[in-house]
Length: 503
Figure 1 (cartoon, one colour):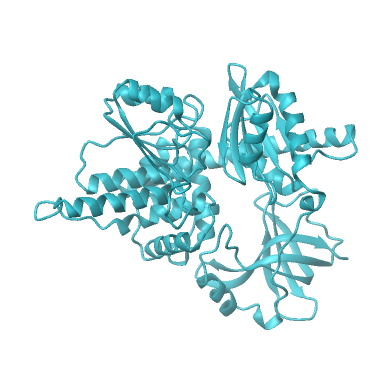
Figure 2 (figure 1 turned 90 degrees about the horizontal axis):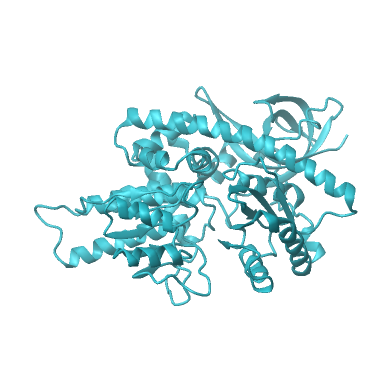
């Protein structure tokens, strides 16, 4: 029984493992994805009971399990072996699993510790295939599978989970992108590309992160990630299109929920600012009507807006809250939560995560205490200058460099991503045209102040109380150079990350 997680990394990990095991002759392999709202995270006791009811003799976790002490113990009580594969940071003690595969274990010498869960699963399947080869498992009656066929799933899960693109992850993502561009991908990925209106032949890593990943994640956030896994497993393109349409509808619903939650959170921030001179260095928010599947995105948006660590909470039933946090450079969020747990035992029921993202649960009655303790700790750990946002730029482009040739060179030099960012530029421009598209996106036409070509640009999710502004004639932009493709025509487009009015 393959037990996954309810995000895009978990879905791709689950699908990859099931497909790989079946291709190597394991006919009796099933999968189970925890329901975020009923089962909790990871190999919980509730998930173990479900696996037992379905006749599991062995549980293989993917993208989870490194903190599932109770679940592993219960599985052993039922006589079920457990193999944990995960990439999340381990705690001080490990679950008593029969085996644990995790590149972040202290005694692991695998050279790439930044693997996503799907990367860990891929290398485990590679090792299993190598072992079976030495045992003479493959031959005339059973052909040896080409596991490179699964690299499209590895690329999608790796980019969607926003793990650092070290040298190894860049190779995995590049190979996966190459297969997708060549049309050699799962029908489910093809269907997601269609519903997102992306041309597979021109696919970039950013498309995986901003177009495909959110649609896949929407299933786990609002419904059940089994829909996403089914999409990735099916060989039927018509069924894939039906499931992709379902995911697209869920993603639209997620956007609407997120927008409402963000408005409420900003109102809470305004209230805080009215009550005290400065915002706390570490922010925690809670609203009794928030959706626990969307608090992670909310925390990310607020972290970007206020440039400080943020944890957002939603009710989880039975007097409990579930929180999701995002951090900034300079504060390791999981370490901060671990320190809080040491200083104030019992404040949190459980927690886990990485440097930049973490999840936790606590009693609703202790939320106010947690908010204050978290703010105090962050205030001790973060220096004031760390709260000053920095926009990194590779400088200004010359007028002649606003060309398709430059944009193509930058695209071909990818894949870009976490810890290997795409080159970004800045400059001053005349603002010739501006209008809203899709309710919250600002479409502009600009011209470099020193002269040059007229260039289209788009800024996503702008503050519509500020833009468009017909009084603004000149702007300073921080942007990436991109290629806009529409009805067979290709043109240079600026993806605007930040814009400031000059006059």
